[in-house]
Image (cartoon, rainbow, N blue to C red; front, side):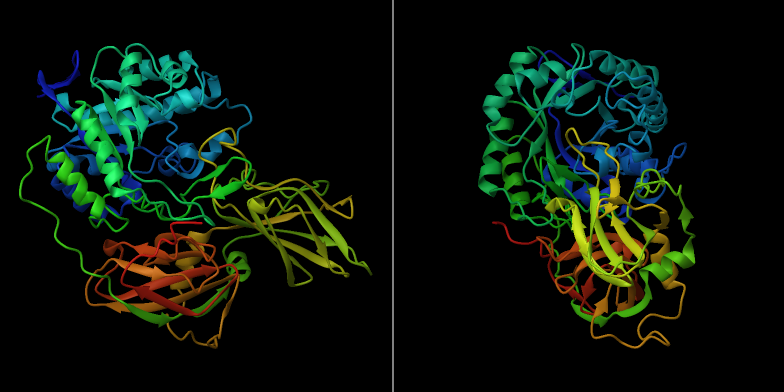
Length: 595
């Protein structure tokens, strides 16, 4: 049995002063077959602790569920941390931000108008209590005083930047202790006086989140917390990217100097991110500060370990800095070989609408509705939905107007695509040609906002839809279960040349296509998407995430453990148009670094 506590100036392990040298690894952003590799490389860097968020909406995609399988096996992840002789910091939120869809909050919760987010509101607290009790059932047996690795647990997340409901924080603390969490509890905020005051309670250890001016910010933190260890629990050594912007990088020497300043001041640190990994599937979030900006699939973060877990120049420079403050062994990561390079032809398998209609049924809604139901009303929390209505004949063109688009709507009329309404362009209207017939909308969620006042907003077509000012009614909806459709493509005839389907000069979307490729052994791969439009991809059923020709990201990372020796299957859902070739390249391409 061991103890971990907070002393006058230090963390204490069995009464002995220790410094936490930690790195952030988000277990759902890493294939579980690679967890140990990333944790070992953290130890080889000189770290003694691994930090992770817990993502509520990923574990509980529906009310009353809590998935701990595969990449959501929190217990196994923490067990590997322990097996490698390291401590762990667990940050269960309930809100995490993390550039993650909806900041980690379940959309089934935030869509309930009765719920008051991140405050002492009864409906919200009831759901939070159920979630935290479930998490703590997993975490409590893994605390240091029970032979496990968990040394710290964080309460909420950067709460001072959002609110100041002390009753809410008190409720979270009381529940955490009631659930058997005995290790020290922390909070984190940017070292701004107002945030540090609002975001914590007197008995909680305040920690800071910052990436520059370390000495100054530690002084601010100390002014608000006269005793206890100093800690930067989010040392930002990189940043994240948005579609349509640049790939962010942080100068290696600048980051190393700031890390040195932190450690020279005697502070503990958590490097955010040590290894960012990938927002697999549709888990990436978005920001909206007047313009909606969805986050890219890669969470490389310009971290010391890149998206594929390979040490970067920042890794080696950080190791030099850390060696001044702790003894390092001779064990270092082996050099990484370039990924295999090859290309295969994609064959169109089935149109998206045909596939969706084969897998589901259209739901018919109240004929008086002046807008189709949102994704939230349909209880479809991520992805796409098809919406349709019948329009009367007209001899002249008409203007279609919607209240608001969240986040992208491709519009077909009379069987032909007539335009796209994009949230980031603030589009709300387009011209329909003369005629009549089916109005078809492909409504796409590009990621829920994860930070700020638009957290928890519904997705879909918001507000009335009108035609020359007259409301459009008679809506039907068809949910697009993208993962199910991708799996069904693989149940058909073998990939490659599909019987009865001629090869295409271009893939005309929205369409599902597939290919088969062989590998000598399981290998990390980089799928080049530069010749494709926008969509998502899977390898052997593993959801790689979104791609978009807008960039900056132009490769999708394929985790080695998701591949196999011999035959492998690739499925692509292309919504616009693509060259029907899947090209795998030796290195990632995350885009330009300047606008």
